[in-house]
Amino acid sequence: MKYIKSVHRHGSENFLLIVKNDKSLEPTNIIKASTSISGIKSIISECDGINWYNNQSINKIEYNLEKKLDTYYRINIKANSGFFNINPNTDYSKIKKYLDLTINHYIKIWQNYKGNEYSPFHGDLSLVGNVMFNSKDEVLFVDWEQFDLNVEMPTGLDIVITLMENIYYEVTRFKKIKKNVMEHFVNSIDNLNDAKLLSPLIVHNTISSTLNFVNSNLDIWKGQHLKLPALKLSKNIVKEIDNAISKVI
Ligand SMILES: Nc1ncnc2c1ncn2[C@@H]1O[C@H](COP(=O)(O)OP(=O)(O)OP(=O)(O)O)[C@@H](O)[C@H]1O
Ligand SMILES: [Mg+2]
Image 1 (cartoon, rainbow, N blue to C red):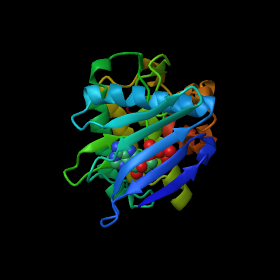
Image 2 (cartoon, rainbow, N blue to C red):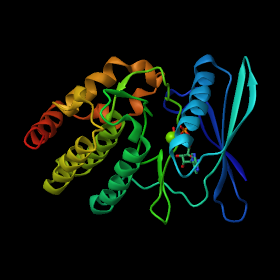
Image 3 (cartoon, rainbow, N blue to C red):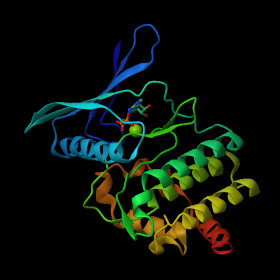
Image 4 (cartoon, rainbow, N blue to C red):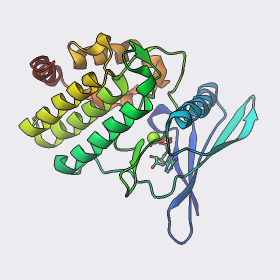
């Protein structure tokens, strides 16, 4: 069974086609195609990002660049069997486990960049869509459309954005950051710092510095930055988190 999941969603210039097994309805292939300059650029980034990731990850992503014409690119990605996305409205006590798995996976994948100011950048490590898990608690980072080895972004920025996304969902649901959620957030930043994967460029005022880097490099998202929940956090929340971090780091 095939179905078109999205056409130009969040300002993307790609068609997204999901192929599913007729019986189990498990996705078998993810196909992205584009005829525009920006869409073709995302497909090239996706290939570069997957190649880079496959060099560091135990679980590899298989793909085939099926069409490579000047005006039409199409990539066919084989779905990694058994991996699932999590629901953003899940209780934080469950999300916590998945955030920890994500941070540990980031630390493994980026281990060659420990102590570096800048590192390769995924650009959308959203726990909701682009970080996947399996029953063995293995992690898979998918959707490498923003990847570009020539872009310099501070080490750790990706994972700080992931943590901020989660705060956004918390604040939307409960209108405040609960104590245990804030503690977990600050501990996560501290762990990243201990692992030497938090660039000195974002150690101080981590959240506002992260937002400054994102806002000064919006072209990385090729018009799709509006989908980043991290950019929707209010100034007060940003201040509250930065204050909490400054007490620990
Ligand atoms: N290698 C993979 N193995 C299993 N599932 C995958 C894989 N790659 C992508 N998917 C699934 O397909 C969905 C869409 O893929 P992807 O995120 O790359 O597309 P997208 O166009 O960027 O979509 P979105 O705008 O939702 O991020 C993912 O959220 C994930 O559920
Ligand atoms: Mg995605």
